[in-house]
Figure 1 (tube, helix red, strand yellow):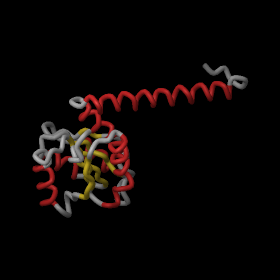
Figure 2: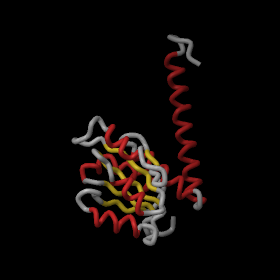
Figure 3: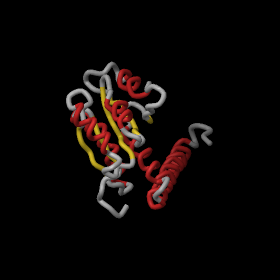
Figure 4: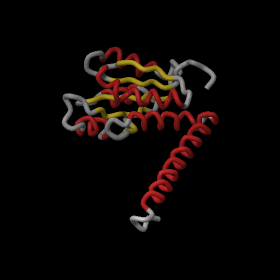
Length: 174
């Protein structure tokens, strides 16, 4: 990407979500995709949330990653205010019921207001999905994703060879 203008927004309901949400930022940084990261609380700063979501596209964002714990209204509310793809990250927070409240609050959106939802605390996957969205119209990012997936495959195959070698005398490992 040639510009430093953010094209992905990473938002979270509270600073306590940062430990999880920084994984999305790290993967976007790895792919050299400009992003912004901030706190936008659906409950404590609803006016800020409305402004952020309603102006995101005109500011140049292409997608939004929204993480929230507990009742987790942020991703769905943002999705209701923008036409951009919203990727929800359920966060297991201190007030969470094992994270299921967050998962279901983000996953169970009504028809017409979709939120792409990743697994509990899976902000890295949200970052990868954002990169895939950007990669549909940016060959450089698409190529980086292809290399990333090739490296994942190589890593698994290398580990399989190592384990087979270590255990070949103990088990019939193929």
